[in-house]
Length: 392
Image (cartoon, rainbow, N blue to C red):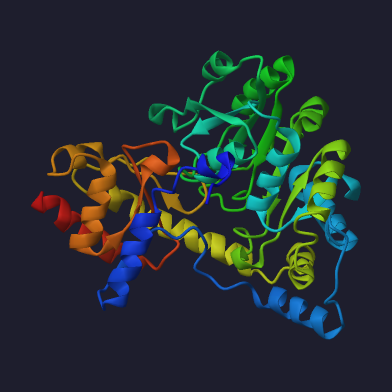
């Protein structure tokens, strides 16, 4: 069968082989520790589950508007006002089947063939593939490790062409956990205003910040930047609701209207009971969300120094999310492996520890470690990693 050129252009995820091998080893009875989790290891809070269950008992099991329940869109508007000092109206909001779907819908809506999208590296693995599927061209700008993996304005300016349509900013970042400051965002934002570049701000890790770090949305910095920005967020990470698949986009009415039209012919509405759960997430609070954040903060404080003690590892302390992104170039160079991806495969086969190689994030000298697991498991994994490194 001949497949579409767009599907054929998708680069297979570098994590697939590791994931498949880890699963195979587990099925064979091996004690594999996985540090690749991209989701909190806490259950969804009970008050959210109960609200969703109640909605079904009350008969809310039918279609909703493609852009989402009006009550949920209002709750999202209230969230923006309370958390970000941003004023949106419900017709500036579309609810999607997860933030990943929101991003994909944006690219499908705004891109024509060969439009360029600036992606700052390290990046979340799906950004470039979603751009390619929509017919666009990813243009990469390196976030320097010595600058907390963040790209500077002059680097971005050098990548702009007459085909540049948009830029993606992910703060806090997956995979680095780093955040852009107000001044850094202003520099990037002013460039985008000057060049008429649409800003896509992925803020899904907004609530997971540590050591007093504060989230700044580029959309809140001026009225002009708000108009230039599409903010993507959701409840997946903040409320441990990854499987519920509720994300959303806030922005200009004309873009949101087109995205809703696209949804009406593709997905229709997100699951209605999940929408009711999201309403509860934004209108109720039993303290469990903050307790989860504190647990991640405690884990980070306990594991960061230990990671830096591994020979050949250097790791900056992140400000948010639940990942560490150590540079392992020295450890790899001293080993019998030719690159980080092969080193990661060897780590899994010999030490039974699964981590994510950094090449899938555009940073081949690094690996991603998720501390969305128990401290005991994480520390045992580091014991195994140290033994693996010492044998090389």
